[in-house]
Every structure is written in structure tokens, then in C-alpha cells.
Image 1 (cartoon, helix red, strand yellow):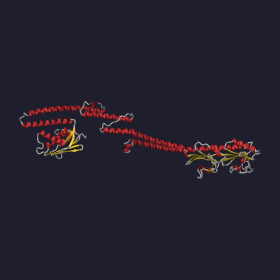
Image 2 (tube, one colour):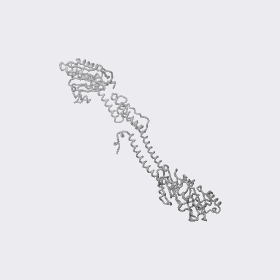
Image 3 (cartoon, helix red, strand yellow):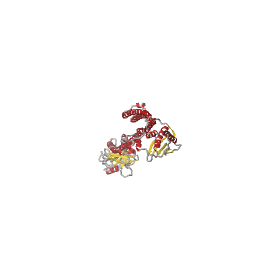
Image 4 (cartoon, helix red, strand yellow):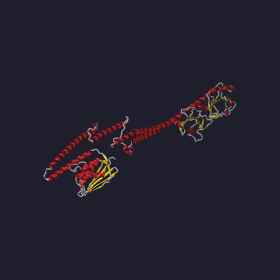
Length: 622
């Protein structure tokens, strides 16, 4: 089904608009496809990033759990060191310093404290040896260690290990691990700076911030930014999704997941271990985490913009290139179709389709010019013109050759008939006249002589018409009034009678300065024919009037006679004669052909007598 008939005319008439419409449809389809793709990609990337951040949090939580397990194992092993003997403070301290220096950088202090005989909260036990001399002799409370309320500073046996809560000092956050010495009367306490351990947090996405939240409070215990205080997660705002999950779950329950907020993508996971109640949280700025989505969206929209610009550029190139060339060719072709063979079609040097169209139009123009030149040669009866030698292919060429042959034969026959008829008619009329002079019956002699005079007049008029149709026009300024008087005087001289006799009055209304630029000889013939007719058939009055116009003149010749028969005017209008429709002589034909030769118009009014209206242009102006 074609949609073009349903388009507005302004669109159907311009290929560029149709191309623009198709381009817009394509761009809309691409835009819709890009939008759907962008949404799908966005959702997929968003889901992948959430899972990626969650996995990263899980890996960090497992690494942190392994770190805690390792520290507990180190403390349990170190508590059995033979160099830890409370009876020798210096030896014990030396051992503690040596071991601390061999441990990881996050090891803050190693201390040996007396163990209380009963359950304790870990505040009053005296410190008997420590890597920090200032702590020796001080109660365990001097270390600010915050032991868990559920276990305090109590042990189930000499192989037991306990883990404190995360606590702070002026330098950051710490966690303590304690395990009894083999005798059970003393306890090895190790403090680890968690803020230093936080420096080793790793992330797969740049800009990620890692935090460790407490399983009881959901407060930030430590993070890689070395926070010196235990603060509420996300500040004073109401509980976040992660906070609610932590607070609603059991402290030792495993929780994990991911959250997308306006500013960040967050993943969280519980640190594994029976004694640990930490939750690792990974926070990635949304702009970073979803940068792939934004980049994909940006690239897709850039693709749409590129496609749109591409179509616009194609439209501009086509509009300024082929379409303008085609429009120019169309104007030139229309000019040629209107007869302007001077329209120049530039063949150019293009070898593309536009160049082919140009060459085709140029060949068409040359074809038309050849036909025109041959038609001009035929109209001028120049049968030996070089233009007639050019080959015209196709039916038109066959028709031109046939017309040339037929026209040449017709003109030859016409010239032969004309010459023979004129010669024989004149000779035979002379013979008839000479014999008529010998006829004694004056009545028959008068009839014969009148007939021969009529035939002689017809022959003379035929010669005049033939000359009129074959002569070359010579435009000159002609005063109309003078030319009318000259024609009138000539008719009077030929008829040897006073024009206006027998009661016929002649009236003229012609300004003396009325002038027209035309051929004098042809104008004389044009005026003679209607004046002769008017003088011959007028009852009482003949009127001749003329007026000058901007581009020529108008001449009216009227008489009050019976009027020209309708049959003769019909024959003249049809430009042919038949047995049933013909004129009585050559007078009207001489008038018509003369007016046509001068490029004028001829009209008749026979309602009241006969009025002949002749409109002639100024040949110079034409």
C-alpha cells in the first residue's frame, strides 16, 4: 500500500521533505530502540553492580574474619611462650617486646595481667608486664579495653580465648584478645589497632569506602578513613536499611545484601566467626558504580545524535547537491518544453547519476534543436539546408523525412501548377480577348470580355498573394492616414471611376499623426482588400477609422451593404474550403494572409453591414 497519496502536497512535491520524514521515522525508531536498550542495560548494570559490591563486602568480611581468627590463634599460641614468666618481669617484658616487634603493624601492646580468682569485668586486674612500661602496675582498666558484657574477663579454661568489643583511644579504634597462661593465674592480653588494619581494606571499584558496623548497635566501629570515634552510621538521620537489618537480626546471625540509594551503592556482609559481631559495609558512590550505565546511556544518545546529524548532513548534501541540480534541470527542461531552446544545460564533468541525467537532458535538447532546425528549413522551403542532413532516430525522424519528402513534392507540384496555370491562363485570356474583339454580337462580346477581365483580376490577385506570402518583411514607420489615401487613390485610378459616386459617401476618422511600424507593401494589400469590398457593396456609406495603441494600431473599415455571407466567413475561420463551404474569390484570403503575415488579428462584424477590424502590432516592438 502506497502512503504517498495520503501525504500533504507540500511533502509530496519535495523529495527532501520526504527524505526528512523517512529520516525522522528512522531516528524515532532508533531512539525508541536506544531507550529500551538503555533501560535494559541500566537495569542489568545496576543489578550487576549491586551484586559486585555485595560480593566485595563478603570478601572483605571473610578476610576480616580470618584476620580476627588469626589474631586469636596468635594470642593463644603466644600465651604458652616459655619466656612469659611472671616471676621475672624483665624477662617477660623482653619476650613481649620481641614478640610484638615480630607481629603485624596493627599490634599495639602485649600485656600480662593477673587473673582474678572469680568472674571479673576486666577492670581491676593488675598489669604485671607490658610492652608499654607506663601500664605496668596499673589496673587493666587503664587500657580502656571494653570487654563484652556477656563474657566479661572470664575464661572457660586455659585454652580459652576471649575477644573484646571495639573501643577507642586518642589515636583510633582498637580490639583486644586475651588468653590465660598455662598456669591459669595470669592472662596474656593483646591490643590490636583496627584502624591500622582498616588501611588494608581493598575494593574492586575506585572510590569505595569500607566500614565495619557493630552487630549490636549498628554503629561504625572503624573504617578506612581512620575515624577516631565510634559514631552512628549515616549520622543523625533515621535508621537506614542496613541499620534496620542489623538491629532486627540476632547479633551472631549472618546477614548480607545490597542497597541502592540516591548517592551510593552499598553492599554488606557479616564477618564470620562465633566471637565476632561485626558487619562489613562497602559504599561506592553512585556516579562511580553506575558510571558504566551512564556511559552506555551517554554513548547510546550520542549514537542517536550522530545518526540524526548524519541524516541531516545527508539531507543537506542531497538538497544542495542532487536535488538542486535536478530542480535546475527541471527548470531548464520546462524552458525547453516552452520553446526556449536557448536554455543552457551544463553537461559538467560529473559521472554519477546526476551527470547521466544532465547528459540525457543535453542530448534531448540537441535532439529537439535538430528537429527545430529541420522544421525551420522546411518552413523556409530550404530543402538543401545542411540541417536536413542530420539523422533523427526514431519515429520523429521517420516523420520528418516523410514530411520533407511530401512537402518538397507538394511545393514542386504547386510551383509547376502555379507557373503553368499563370502562363496558360494569361496566354489563353489574350487569345479569348483577341477573338472576342471579332465577335459582332456586342452583348456576347461584352460578357466574354467581362469574364476574361475577372479571370485576369483573379490571376493578378493570385500573383500578388503569392508574392505577399513569400516576401521578407521590411518594417518602417508608416502614417496610417497617408497609406489609406494612397490605397483609395490607387483603387480609384484602377477603376477609372470617382469613388463615392452613385451616392456612396466616404468618411475617414484617422489622426494624421497615427503611425505604426510595419511593412508598407503588405499593409497596402491588407487595406486594399476590405476597401475594395466596401466600395463594391456599400449602399451609401463607407467609414474608415484608425487609432494608435501602445503596441500598434487598430483599423476599422465599415460599410452599410448587405454584409459578407456567413459561408465565406466560416470558410475563412476554418482555414479551408470545401464544395459546400467556399468563398467567391481570393479577396478575403488575401486580407487574412496579409494580417497573419504582419502578426495581427482580424475580426468581422456583419450584424449591420460589414465592419472589418484589423489589429496590427508594431513590428519593432514585437
